[in-house]
Amino acid sequence: MKDEMPNLPKTLSFKMPAEASPLGYRVKPKKTLLSVERLRKSFAKGESAAVERVSIDLGEGEMLALLGPSGCGKTTTLRMIGGFETPDEGRITLRGRDITHLPPEARGIGFVFQDYALFPHLNVLDNVKFGLRKLPRAQAESRARDMLALVGLEALGARKPHELSGGQQQRVALARTLAVAPPLVLLDEPFSNLDAAMRVETRQEVRKLLKEAGSAAILVTHDQEEAMAVADRIAVMEKGRVLQIGTPDEIYRNPVSAFVASFMGRSNILTGTASGMEVKTEFGTLPLSRAANGAVSLSVRPEQIMLEPDPEGPASVVGREFRGHDQLYWVQEGERCMLVISGAGAMIDVGARVRLRICDCVVPLS
Image (cartoon, rainbow, N blue to C red; front, side):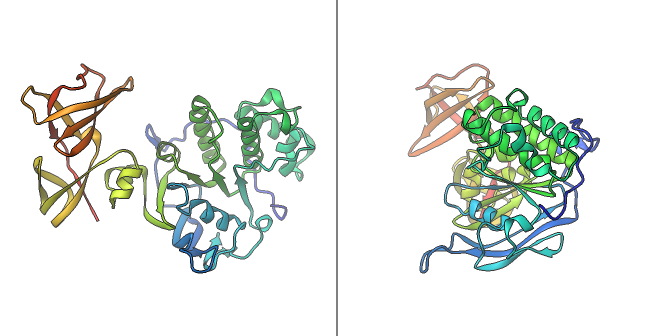
């Protein structure tokens, strides 16, 4: 980032853009900012690749989440994009410029990693100001103070990093990166050290800032709620491969595999025999979300199932979790245990006999 200082937004007002919907920013076709083509990385000869033929395009100003369990290759992919790992194969371009083999400092990318990388000899304010050295001193200080206010640390500007908690250090690192408004920001589990309330608040503030600044971002996370709340699109990864890329709604409603269905929220996996837009199951003939034929596995979300109390019902409630806005039930029918989510109305007692009824389209899985 030494080569060029991006234009910084003049203000930090976070008004919702006119094109934003109540559910978040609309995903529009955008000019490609970053192109990742068939990246492959192996750390030891003879072992399975940590990243296997990963290809991703990112639009200008878009936020993408790399979502998956530990060891799936998401952080290694992020590190290759940032220049901290060299791919064995593949190509990375940023605004048409091949950056595959450039060092991190020559890529013009912002980084927020879990190890913070703060300068111990500088106070918090000076850490945030570090990337703003080409600005006039007064402007750099004003910008840095605005960033500290954004992450809730405006009162701690004079402290040294070691005088802060781990969560506070992570927020300083985030403020320092966002201060220079790079075209692309890489975030590796940036909210993991924050408490639950601060995590929700901070991720929305970060999203708003990135949108206003026009910066695109790639977020690595294992938290599907976080990915759905922040990202315009999600890439679900397993064993070094991208299994599905789409908007949060697309992936949640139309997962392509049992792994994606289960990782993007809770899901019940059933089997059936499909014929066109219908499938025969143990719960009767059900409509499909897309056409299929033959033996299929099916994804049924817990909220798609209705519980009907019935003293003669074939199933019984074996567990219940009250969650305020709704209730989660574990329901045993034969050898199968189903998850069911119902509203916060009358509770059904553990041990009660019930019937299950699926009341929506089910999704055939590959």
